[in-house]
Length: 523
Image (tube, rainbow, N blue to C red):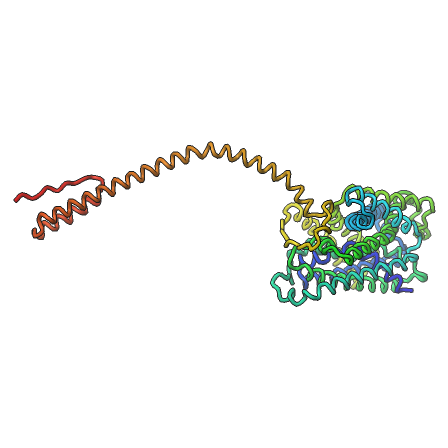
């Protein structure tokens, strides 16, 4: 029975973040990224333990009501707002990924042109026909069978990457292009690792679905799921980095693969895996939204209210609202990476690290190992929120423009002009190139008018200089002829006359432009 819950939590943990693991391994280096992932897993397990221990102390097994019991109405509102924003942002990311990977597959299957209309249609079908029916299930335990299939798919993707990277392993390990330790990527990638392993919002949902709820059993399930996901992330990041270590790697590793039947099947499986993961994200979001809209403050003081039962009409309305709202945002905003990065560093740090640690510190007074761990976790959470947000904002303000190696496409017919990032970039560059050429022509015209007088002036100076050099050469020639004439006339003159000639030569060199005529000696 516990194995099914391990798989359920593992499926809720593994999501679109797995696609960014090779990018993080390239940015941080293989060794540093592995250590950061292991550290993130330890932090998540500690935070989940603190949450379960706090629930046991306060006798509240609901995140929002636990915050209300500890900090009052302000704590409840803070948790609900952060939970709603974080979970809805995750749903938007799910739709964005499905919108990137789904339309090319649908275009191949149906023969329709891959454009924005097809993307909208694919997202509507997946949202209303797959995500919404699964999200209407009231018990997450009923999703265990689907989650087993989803996790099995992730394992098959990992095997494909491992097999594809095996041929490049030795060359990569002996190459100078492979990063092993790069601290410059910590601020950008460590928040991704924390969010990639986070399962705190789903802890109480899974806990309520256990046949015999027990915090020690629940912690064992969480620990096993986090360890499994950490191993998968390390393998996926390492071998994905090995495959493309000679080129730039983006946040979605699947777009780096050359088109093939296997790759298209992998994309299709990933789209379906993301779709069936919606319910596990919507469950805590729905609970927080219901508590924010319908629960009264005075009703939260009793121990019976944490039962968390939502009437069927409210349950369906809230679920429909969440799916439609996130679907609409995912259609309008196809590029959400920056927004999710900032949300992960801010709201994600607050809801997943800081608030659980503060709740435990508020409920306990004895300074034991758990309380010291809670203080340490709170400091790490605040630091992650500050420096992680700075790292994301810094990357936005000063992006690095890099050019990866050109990929050789064997089948030109496989290129989709509507979906090819390279062709899209080139089409965007055409108007810019035209404008630059027009500006350059105007600048060249004005430059010609400015440079012409300067060139004429410079040429005039050069002509004068050459003319002076010609005159100097003529004067030197005359002096030499006169010296020869003197030597011919008086070959046997005295030493004084010779010295006189030397003195005369030095004077001539100083004033070379003056012609000196030496008189002939009379007989």
